[in-house]
Length: 274
Image (cartoon, helix red, strand yellow):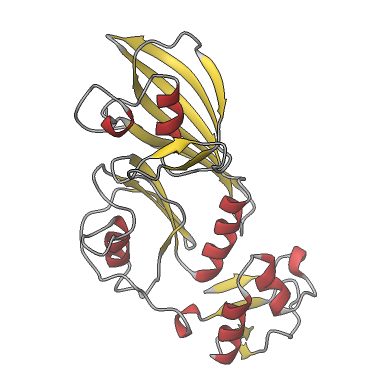
């Protein structure tokens, strides 16, 4: 992978460049030991200095191998470039394998198997939830975007169908969420982790409200727990008190982020299947 060096990295060392994108120190050490770093075609160490206009070649394949067995399945690709892949996940599919079944990560690994590209998922969706999942295509891309997720600088918007009619059409739920000791669900708990959810009711018809949701925190089952706390569980979410059966009606619809390498703000949208 070749990285043209822009002015912001002029006179930085290779190590400083890699740290700028939050690559871990262990990976930086491995790249140097594996002779995987080149400036303008010449092998270098992490202490060597970059100049604007240089081309830094990083052979990630020297230290990185896929951990997913290739399982071919047609992907619904929404967008990709040399660094990232955005796909639309169907319902009833794990993002990561639980050790027993096939996951979306297996399918993505298979898509790039012949190109020897090692992909990594950057966030999770519940198995029942549909919508966008973002993958990195090399270690530096993963480190940079994982940091953005940790800093909560990624804007995420979901759409849900909820039971009942909301009395308040716009609201904010700031309630910490923790694990329920008695089953696999999550609960609102004073000892839980902070979670911030904003909602806006778009429409109401035949006992069902269509709701747009923005979240900060990304706790497990956050949207489902928060909406259920308003007595408006997501349609199909029997775990959190929904009376309706069938598929869960929750979809990751819109994502906005700053691309770490181009510094462009990107927004992608994916309509729900219902």
